Length: 617
Image (cartoon, rainbow, N blue to C red):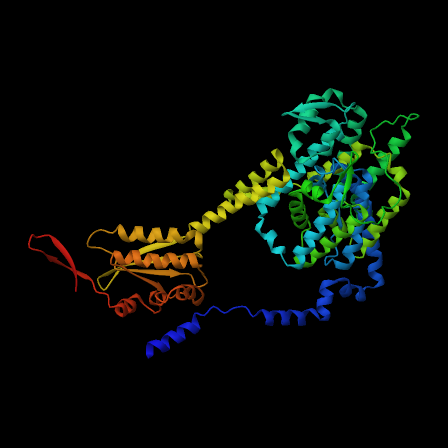
């Protein structure tokens, strides 16, 4: 009767409580219908009622400063993506307005970035509609991830991998712009590794043409245009110098030098336009220019679910197939680039921004680290500063497109290269090397695969390299095995210092059996005490292997006891088999356990022939 009562108590202790779905749904629905939930979903409701006139000037100045950076960067990143310049401007305004409603961080500005532009470049050779569709579908994916609270997925991408990816992307983009910085006299076609490239193709900076960019540069070095090279190098040097101007101690001119430094990209473009216009000779221009930009605002229309290439209609299914893995990699990289604060809400804001961007012919957009830093330095107070930035871009589209025709390509290349130099986190690379050198391996894998294969596979390669370490560590947990003699009984104490899972189940079993069977005759282990950490857990594979281990040890005349296990781990053993309850023991000392198990040491006798014989007392 007592045994039955003990079993009932054990059943209650080790019962695995299921999830009450109805209760969770009720609680969630009640939580949804609150003012705080509405404010979390639409953060504008939280800060707009508190808005005052003191914030207005700060937001206006910050929005204007960011806008002066966003316009030249948008045009430059359109060239990286292999699109016409207007597509960069189309991408630079919608995110500014959407983020006001859904964004949580006053500093973040959403728009085109160099990395997303590079990622989409390989898909736009047939039609820019691919970039627009990619923007819309990426937004749908990011929004779904945000609504399902799956922002935790990015935690599986380590800092060495993201650092390596950013470095490789920056090197690739800068390398692609070398040929824009030193524009060749002609659009040269050449072969490299069985592929045909042109100078125009290389200037786009595709991720799998890193080597080809430099090959083209060195083989056609004598054909570069001196005017463009001089302008590009001079602009790059001035941009780097102007970046440092804001750090100078200029007394009462400090604010002036600060905003001059923050507006350096706009000033570089303005200087390039003036030089190109003033030095023109009849219809001949002194520099290669970005070319015609379609005037006016983009039409607000559905994203292109089909397109025409060379007179052939490409249906939606074929377009999605062509985009392929980019539909996963671009949303993932967009999330990583955004430097999320409230991950779930920021993903929703980013998703809606891309979805709405698809209606105005935008390429994929994300949070820009460069413009976010400028926004913060300019003293922005609320996300309303984005409205000024977005309005400035719209005004540029409406009134300044004819002026943008004269922007030299070398100037845009200098702006891009200047930005890429500071995208590489040199200090972070040194920190990875100093702190743990094995972490340098996934970093190196990411960089090399990105540079010599493609960005998409580079980040996957880095993740796989990291996962290799994680899987190996989970398959080889730290196990400390010691031997003690208590009351003339030889016992083995096995301490598992990490959580056990299916990958380590066989390893644990092998280590214990090897230790037990390797003991010298006369010193046989009579008891194995298996201890785990207080917060550890096990799965069914480990539990099955422990039961199998118990059978194998019994053949060696050895007992197995799971000593002082926590309820979570012990419950798996108990629920798996009723025999599992016999393995679970709790107590204060090993002596108490040995007495409870009634273990006694063997003693030595001699048979008639004089050989040793072990018997139990």
